[in-house]
Length: 313
Image 1 (cartoon, rainbow, N blue to C red):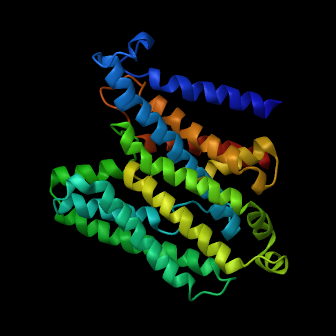
Image 2 (tube, rainbow, N blue to C red; image 1 turned 90 degrees about the horizontal axis):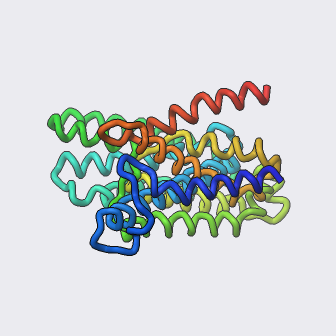
């Protein structure tokens, strides 16, 4: 009964989130296009909540998949360097005068990383998943070095813009700008559901999954590439937002106490809720501007994750 009550309470919070912020919104003005409340709700608040929810779903579900494939509870969607590649793409666009195409450059930075990883998976054996993990870490270090070069080449305003992007933000204007992240998240959710039996077998061991008829290498490749593309779309719009893919799968496993393949939808939902709640806090702290959401997720996620570790112990 408890999980159902949790879901009802969290759904209610997601519904009321667009109405709360520094400027209050009156419900009776939402059908009048001439009012400020109408534009604020439909062009700013609702797109922001949608981006937060679906971005959180991508990051949380990506965390579950990475932890299942790598059999490492500390793996996250950023492990393979996709987020670093996207950040580097955005920084390149800022420094070299393509500020109107930040999301596009961010996505191509992530896509370039996915292509490198996919080419490497063709050369790795099915049981060499950890080798791919090390390659991702090496790529992240390389991208960070390239990012430092761009910082050196940038002026003060460009450096500030890059730093602001790396803090994460779900500040999106217009419902049409939410479509890429919605499609990416729903596609990842559908693919994860389709491969849920394979995920359950891979959690045991690659050899056991192979004996049960799973094409381990193909499954790993499809899931890793799919998560990387979805995360690339997410990061290109929101910037890198940490902790969601790390803590949400662990929290949901603690609450539901079920195997991974039965937690796909709850983890997606709770990840979305966590980011919506973080954004709601960022918009209501009373400051003159919104606090970057990446800071909020770190403040909420870090202590709570430590609490969970101590409680399990």
